[in-house]
Length: 134
Ligand code: ECB
Image (cartoon, rainbow, N blue to C red; front, side, top):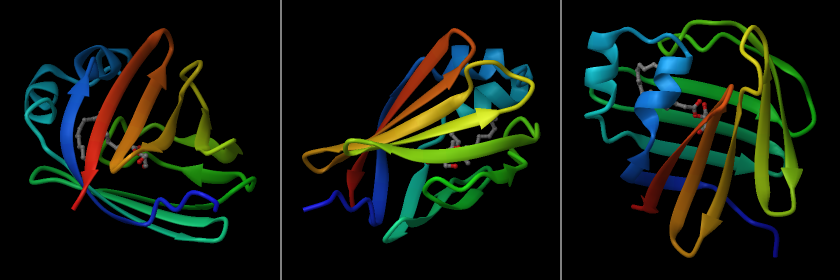
């Protein structure tokens, strides 16, 4: 059975978000707020077409993509940089490469039990977020 990321996922914990945000040049006040958030993820997966909505009390962020198809991403409400992004499968992980001004930028999602993992990468920094099925 192929992995299905669809569902509602509630934030459990994160690691190293501060360092990740620093690499993106997020200002002090925004980092303080962002570090307090417990975002929710709403993922819809239909074959190789995904929509991922991240919501929080502060800001929301949505992205839609098809595996293997490059798309323009504006990161609006995050660091607001524009990227040319593409998501591919790596076994049971989805791996996003965000090509743009920042080197080695991207993220991966995978599932372990009833937990959803998100690894956010930028330059030398990696931040991990863990969510649980609602
Ligand atoms: C949308 C909730 C977080 C809002 C934080 C606001 C400002 C901080 C600015 C930049 C920090 C970068 C990331 C915060 C962490 C996660 C936001 C969504 C990351 C993302 O791109 O998720 C992917 C994979 O699920 C789908 O877009």
